[in-house]
Image 1 (cartoon, one colour):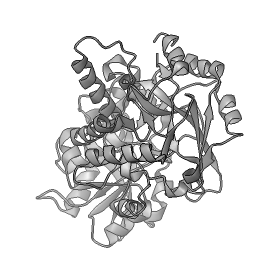
Image 2 (cartoon, rainbow, N blue to C red):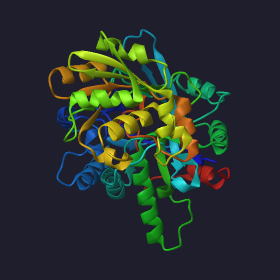
Image 3 (cartoon, one colour):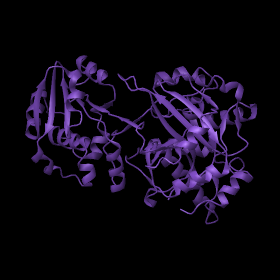
Image 4 (spheres, rainbow, N blue to C red):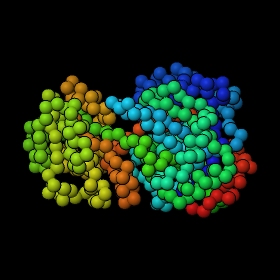
Length: 444
């Protein structure tokens, strides 16, 4: 189903990449204002292409990109390849080192309706437009989105491991504590195997919905401008993606807790507790730090922390039938759907998923201690502690054709910007080797 192609990657020149840690940056949607300001001080950091700090960001990125190409800051590899990308990391409180294995390539930018690339969340138009404008002005893809394919036979991992014996470069430790390593496969026969495996599979978009939709918007604009003359093989039909195997144990999804910043008008904390008991069994607990362990593995269970008091919430089994949002059974079964429906809508009166997405009264926080401290400092009324979403739930929702509540998944670690760039400009995207692969691509 999914057509992938090798990439003639653009990378920092060898002199600069010996200090790759100084050049990489967090993705545009997770980089904090403080991180941006720090990274802007380095005139060669990739942040200047991914999140330019200028009045006209896209124009500034285009100018800077042209300068970096002309001066040799960035160089394009002679041959296309599949770029192998490993991330070594540990989870908080664990001594186990994980290694998420994947590879970067071009994938055809499929419309959602084609059901080849599947989404699990909605996007914000302003962020999509921002990414589309950046792509239109630069014709340069500055960071790969993260996609998932499922291969229970792990056919490609041996090729990935072999490539990693000769890495191109690696970080000592990125901003999130992971060690990132890049290698490349340029063997034609091996690349054909990668294409064959993906040609039989759908891809779930794990991270990067706004960047992917930005590519779709740009492709649609170019098709319209071509006025029926486009062949479908133009470089702008493709999108840079990092693909990992959904069957791997090293694919981790972390929970994103809900911080209640304020109560809607007319509501009080005693009212909220009383109304929660209509739908939940509410059990006081001694230590809020124990809430993740208390609710672990229990469906429709949550932790609640009000200043000085912790509770376990467990949905009454008979209450679930009252959930009347127009969505699929797979979405209705999610913990977060239960939380958003019964707590935010039924108890707090924020009616409907669209209103909740726009509601400023809730914040999404991954760190448990941060949640508890912000409640104790009076910056928030309450914290709702949740379990992580499983990979099986992500796959079930995607194949049902629906989307999850906002901020349902946090695939960890995030990929980083600056490791690999790709061009979709007509005069930079191909050569004889790449044209061979395009001409002989497996049918979708």
